[in-house]
Image (cartoon, rainbow, N blue to C red; front, top):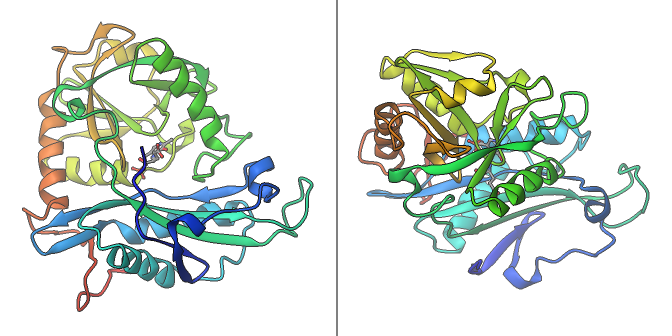
Length: 314
Ligand code: PPE
């Protein structure tokens, strides 16, 4: 269960956790009109630090723009500062940050343009997304019978609440069948992504990941994996991936803010490679966690320190 923190940021001020409620007739409830982000703040030796804050704020602004939420009322800098302030106010040493932009209460009907836009930012402690052992042992997943949202249906580049109805169908089906996650194919039948993760497929030492045109969220962890693979001299291509490539891969792994870098040990009960975490996933995990935990220098300015005197990199 979610453990409340003290405060939530709402339209420029801090309110109590329990006060962060909306009217049932808010536009978002009937029509799914929200965009949001998920950001991790890690504990480092020099205090809590938010991972890739600038990129998350930018993606939220992009999502809002796609849905014609033209004026959030706050600049990228103000939103980033609000998130850092929230972590300070709640005295968190590490946490997950969830900013949400939603169409609020005012009018009913599909037309969203008359409803106010509300911005909330909450944070809480969030452990390992796919279970405690997932990072070391890998997870058992399936290919979903649900197809990822088509390119001319809901825009996949936007991280919109409504997209997650599709994700929920995938997730519930996977759980009902004893898997921890589902992998969706896109409308053309090629590998797209997990319900809340991007995916990578390794064969003969080369990493493959679906391109943005395969209805994937432009994951910020995905982008970090691209950078780290390049630096570690692991070849990587963004390319369409046929489903059966999953089964004959040496390794498959997920990336995501919540899932971090999670190896996949079987798909549809077929063992992947040796049926456990492979060396490529392990190398990337090692590098990723060394940076986010502050044991290696933050050579890309990926971390925004939470505490005063250290300006955010936004
Ligand atoms: N694809 C989807 C569909 C997705 O939801 C996420 C993040 C990603 C890829 C990876 O993106 P990024 O976090 O920028 O690397 N999913 C978020 C929500 C999870 C949830 O259950 O809520 C997350 O990981 O925070």
